[in-house]
Length: 189
Image (tube, rainbow, N blue to C red; front, side, top):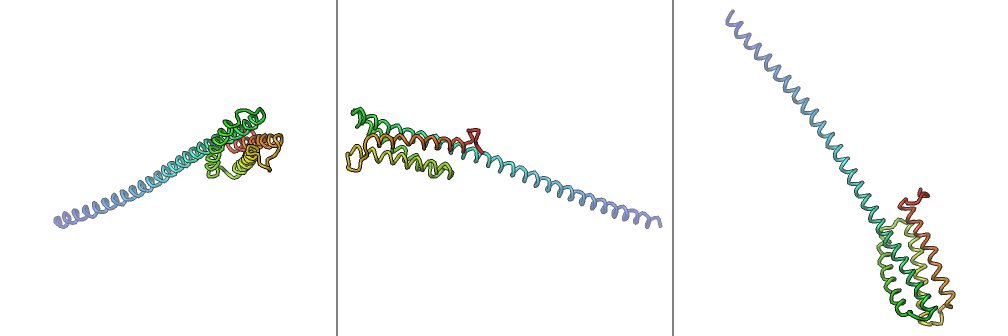
């Protein structure tokens, strides 16, 4: 009996030890599962934060690129207009027309390059205003060239000057549209 009690005591102890070990292992597995789930949630949050930061940086970079395009296009358009006005003044006083015409060609080339870039970047409302500026400036260029070439279709100098000067109106509208899009004006939506 004593030997049987000793043997059964050892067996019961071993069974209990195995049961405790199984419970510990199950608890440890549960803890590991909770830790993994927590780690996955944290990684998902970090990834979402990283994506948001990337998107925010991308939006800021795109906005800066758009703003630079606005500045370049607006500057080129105003220089093109100024070169046209210089030709008109040169024709009026009768001197410096050749130099003004060369400056006009240079300003036109810069404007065309700037407009090509703008066509790729500008949102539709601003592109509509830029297109109106382009048409008006190119109309002024055409009448000046006909006047300089003394072609039969050339308008009279006063009419030519009026057509060239009228570009200031569309340039002002372009500037307002750009400022509105950049949310610089208080009237921005």
